[in-house]
Amino acid sequence: MDAQSKIYVAGHRGMVGSAIVRRLKAAGYSNIVVRKSSEVDLRDQAAVNSFFESERPEYVFLAAAKVGGILANNTYRAEFLYDNLMMEANIIQAAYKSGVKKLLFLGSSCIYPKMAPQPLKEEYLLSGLLEQTNEPYAIAKIAGIKLCEAYRDQYGCNFISGMPTNLYGEGDNYHLENSHVIPALIRKFHEAKTGGKEFTEIWGSGTPLREFMYVDDLADACLHLMLHYNEKQFMNLGTGEEVTIKELANTIKEVVGFDGDIRFDTTKPDGTPRKLMDNSKLHQMGWTHKTSLKEGLAHAYRFFLEARGRNVS
Figure 1 (cartoon, rainbow, N blue to C red):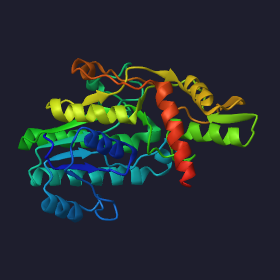
Figure 2 (cartoon, rainbow, N blue to C red; figure 1 turned 90 degrees about the vertical axis):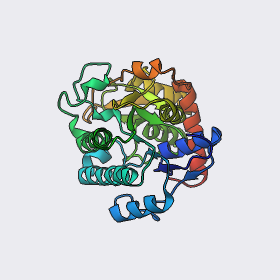
Figure 3 (spheres, rainbow, N blue to C red; figure 1 turned 180 degrees about the vertical axis):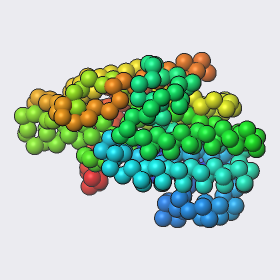
């Protein structure tokens, strides 16, 4: 892949896709193709095929996905399964048909069994039952991995997969019910601070362990894989560091400047008790993350305030 290569970033308006576009531009890639969902519905096979036939991208970053937190995953189970299956299947098939040189499919750490040994190694895939609350999304992402493997096996396509850990940063979704844990907590603490509240309430016990990566670090890892990785085995993309939700909440509380208390609602679900990925294969390739959690959270809070200034809910 060189500076003149034609690169399609699917999902460029999302947090991950927009970070990949930023990273590509910073690295000197200028021939980047993007399309809004209103222009090309990625769930529509005919529309996707027409787009690939006319644009003929050489490289594809498949970051398009329907995403959300525990509540959204558990409420919109049909959409999370159908939409993600259709998008990835259409893009992967069209990439094969149009002769794309290389494709990177991005999944999620939720592909692993709920009670898999920790840290999560790539070979633990399909070794046990999934977490029920986000099973549809996980199944869709597993299907994407298997599609890339199958097209590689049958057609010789250089289609690779990366599984990011929990992400946060610029472009995140701060909706209280449909967001992931970090943006939800940032908004909760900010509103508690500005509202002069004495406490804020958080779902669950605070004991689950989670790993988080700043989204611009992920984008850098994606470019690294696109340039240097050509194997069938999908690769974990994370930091190798973990914190409890309680520790995370206290750090966000400090970053936001909320002086009140934190109360945990133990009647609400925790999700998977621990989810740390084994990132040894990524590190052996010579890549490690650059942004510390506290530094990344400070950036994320700044982006939240900027979005609020633009009246983005």
